[in-house]
Length: 211
Image (cartoon, rainbow, N blue to C red; front, side, top):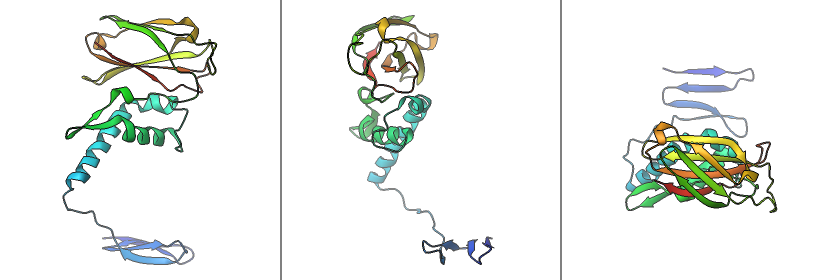
């Protein structure tokens, strides 16, 4: 069963059975066989690539609402989505023995020209996370009014909280109240600064795992 359509200039397009009518680059009609998906099993190398891509899609899908706003340097790509996928495939999804894993120390939640977060100390208990950082307001691309954002992520449950624009660079310290879902979980912690208008971000800083 199939159909084809003839447009106003007599060009046929569509498919009938295994035959497809298409328009070539020169504007002329072309008849060719309908492509059929390969039923051959994936080679070990192909399956490894598929597994890597699947893990990349999963982890970037979790955080994409953050990435879409906070990737303000596209890393040579056309948009945030392409920048995220390219970077995570190249740097974040790494092979360990025969399995792919997330290299949490390589994760970037933001990119851009704002001066990055420089940690002094951080601590946590079941109720809160306390952060201290260098103000660096005398350095290039740093303003007292820059806004701090923090991502807390629990890999064991994939639960996360993004504290967006929670204080200014000049504050030099901030306490984050933990939701119950994170109170007993090991946390991967990422910080970043943005301009006061939130139109430009820094390359994020990984503060390590807090247990």
